[in-house]
Length: 569
Image (cartoon, rainbow, N blue to C red; front, side):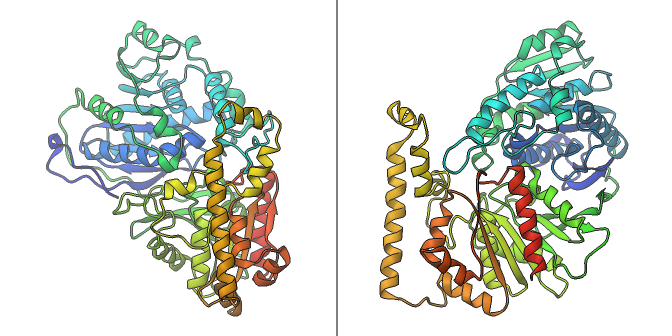
């Protein structure tokens, strides 16, 4: 893991790379430091934390490099941590207090700084009510749980959409915010949080960056805290989308400077924590592994099924190994209950793995296939493996199936393309939101869309450009078929024939309306029957779900498809 240059005030010992730690069945990452002042990072939840993830990780590394023992962690029920007995605000607050205790015992610190982001800032303030916290950083906090839920509901309308542009089917009793489905107990308890009704936390020094909700700064000052306030430039780019997230460097510099204020001289050498114990739950045991610059979680079943092949989960875009809405973690654990071992890994540039030399995400990068093969090395026991992934993870899954004989089956969903031109501008290619011509046609049949067109809210020019691009591509494919009527060995159809010859299998799944459906038609046949003949089975279409397959029905269907594919391998 790459760390920033150590702070000169703590020269004399190089910072130690962050190591995985666990406490009370929660997974965290600890960076040792020389200071007796330690820092706990209290992240936000769900979609916002996925967007902030890489920047949050780098903030932790920079704080550790500046000399401060630093701990970041997944709340119970989030990321790779275990499930809580009860999912509510009290559980989250208790988790922060546990993190503070870990830092005091394992890091040997005398002072503790809490740094909270968004609703994590609200939780950090609640955890500081009993005292014992020396400094508190609140980054764009919410004054109440209702304010948080209200904003998430508003944002969900733009984040959670079906491929044809229709709103995500929401259940008011169980809403989804960017794939994140809060438990009923957490929703109810968040609705009861109101910082304006609570006594100010007894924290000597507080830094609030972002809007001051409900006069929070004044209340803290009235309680005796020294409060510094300021803006949070770059909040939206930081939290809006993981693929294009930009770390708020100015804000993070202020956080580090605040942490340094009044810090005592460093004492002794960095203290390394005890090795992480496994995360456990009903039917599974999980351990962190590191290989090369990659990080992964091996999910081992309590009772292995010797007839079932292990499963390698590949990142979807830049979503971390836990998956969009924590779907991958939950799927891996449900498979473990059936006796299946799995590895969910982060490619370089994603999650907790190292950075790529070019600083870019690994989407459609050919060199990332070598990292995925290294993941197969950790799973294969001589019988082969199953690989699965969504979107760019589907792309890698297809190429692994074609190139690595150890891959017996690939179960891939919402494949964008079979082959990627490295000269293509990735950001421009992904702007159309993965919509197909059929999806655009469906969108224009919806009530109210034409009013949006007339108001200029729908970019007709961009849609037309996208449709022309698709049409030209299909004309090119048709011309190629006329000139070369039989598929070559390097064509998609030729590669499918090759892996089928060795007994391997490809299962293609799409949300209805995905652009990749057109890619399949171009390469494997215009009719479902023709495609099914070349694959050995039909393409599976899932209705009424989004690109990330966040609906409960889609996730259960995916689980069953993987189980069926493994059983028939």
